[in-house]
Length: 398
Ligand code: LMR
Image (tube, rainbow, N blue to C red; front, side, top):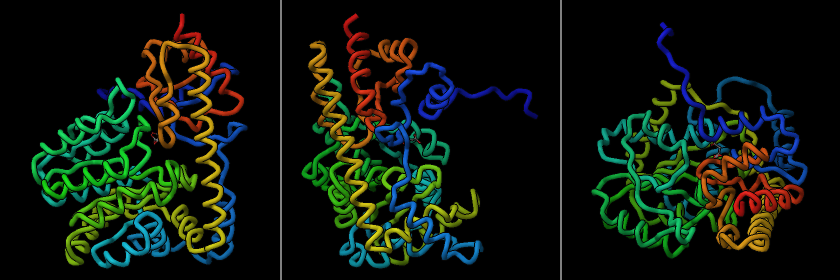
């Protein structure tokens, strides 16, 4: 049966991380996969998460199945964190949420839902987008194409081109938007630009599918939710895939949620039933532990306050590092003006260096960034920053 099976190429992000782990260069630096690292190069568990986890385990009396849609406390709290209390109350039964295995699970369940409606149009994604959007959504049966987004000349969003493309998308199609902290470029649209995008979606009867994987990593928990909140307040139908991997540091616990807003409660219940049916077909129901921990944390005002303060520190440190990188590189060379690095948002940005230099940095110095030149800003540290500045400058000015 398997004699004709060829080994597939490794995933561009997870595969590169594996290559990094196997590299025996003692000075290697990992700027590949999107994982936060502290000054010691570790990915610590948030203190508030650890406390919530302990309390949950101590109180837990059973491992019987959780409700198939997921832990109700988690679903309620995480919806309120993203969408906000007022809007959640206003939406009422137009909004439903189902727990998923991480953000990937949420994207997949959203895709399964779209396929189950008989949707035959296209899903429009930004050019570029997260490397896994294509395989993940296409393998569910969706057809993907791109709208213009990133401008390599300015290292920012080409908003005019984005609007022009979105204004020409056929009615009824799906537009995938990054809720905040665009992956891979770190170039986000402003609140005013979100308003304009959502007006076009409204005029053209386009449905947004918003991928939120970094709430709190950009400008703040509420600021990063602006696009989602505006979309659900203005539009009849919205899908949101939300991940707790990064902002709660729950990477391996696979904690996420798919949220669906439709025109009314009946349609939303129908949509939810299709999501749960798709989950049953694929994995029956999502793992509970991470969702239990996040739900317990968000249900406690004290733990929530502690987590928010830790999250703020993470964001501020990433911001200091990105500014440090930009200033260091600008001081060390004049070939590229790296100011755009300090303007980027969240975990990632493009470095915009020649691709050959990316490969040289990897092979000669064990500095790993994606071939697109995406770096994980959270992989920078006070210690490795001077080394990175020196090596990038050396390679750039050879
Ligand atoms: C990334 O983009 O590095 C992260 O979202 C991790 C992943 O699964 O790709």
